[in-house]
Length: 439
Image 1 (cartoon, rainbow, N blue to C red):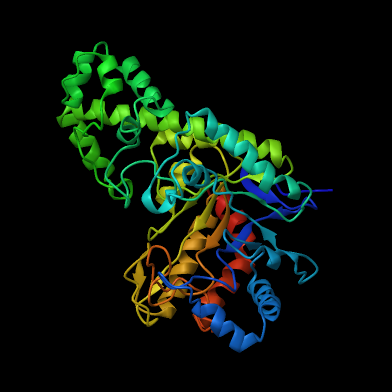
Image 2: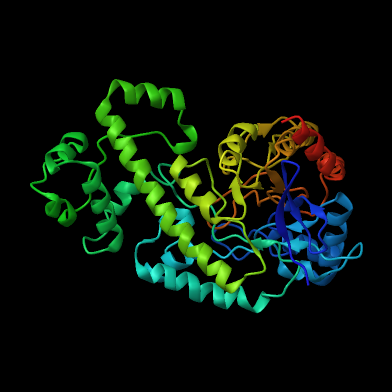
């Protein structure tokens, strides 16, 4: 019995499928009949429209898998209906990439249902209960599928907050320093800072505080950041470099934050990777779908523990992000990307990604972006976000209202985009082979 693996052949990374053949992961996210419901409502317009068109959810499933296969997709991305993976088309079933929501599940359990993704709450990975939660959660979710051959691998989480982003300006270090004084996370933050400064006076000088000793730092309430920084995906590295050169204390603060982010990442990836390998030894560990390029120590920790580094990329091009991830020697996969057209009739006011003028430009942009990524020798897959457009009223719970679909909310195909997807999917292996030869 075979399973999906990764392999480096002649300097190029690939997946291999259960039969041992080279495989690139070509996926669409969130393929589901019960797609997005309208914000603060039980209404699911896509499901209502599909019922009128197909007659039943089962008939929709059959038609959708056939369409995805005809377009050349071989994998169901995150949040897809698992029943789709049971349908055999073209002699086999599609691979599937379930998402475990480990960190968000722990946050919800510890914080009375709080939404970790929506509010950017990072779990206290220094708390022994986190590792225990990961083990018990993955035993429950993964272990029943231990011999399921068409599971490509498991995502541990999605878009964790590694620093300043759309959810708030705080660094991970200051977020952990704001935890209750007896929490393992706060103690870990203080212990790290003690190793980085000869005395509390040196710390006070950089952080613009006035603590009498390390114990008073540990017992204090929230600490204000001495320096603010842009959201991580907005930071200009040259601007950052010049700011740190001009102010050595700022440079020390930034170094503190990066060191702690690396420590958090090591604890997080170590715990979830161990739990995945224990519960699902036959399947790949696909990581936590970075929302943006995090601090270098975070990527380094991910590379130490993951089979594949997964990241979401809503930039106009993939190469700059891909270069930073692939530098760590692991295969890489883009697990969300998309482009929104101004002619779609949707507001496109909430959600990530660039806008284009029309569907023809959307198709060209998809083709150019995907082909560029495929040329990287470390690149092993791409997941388009998402199958159907979002409701114009905004989806629950965050109000996204964008033209991300390969079909409209009425389940009508975007023909130009589909034609481009068909072309790229059929040529992907050759693009990867030829592009990687030239790298």
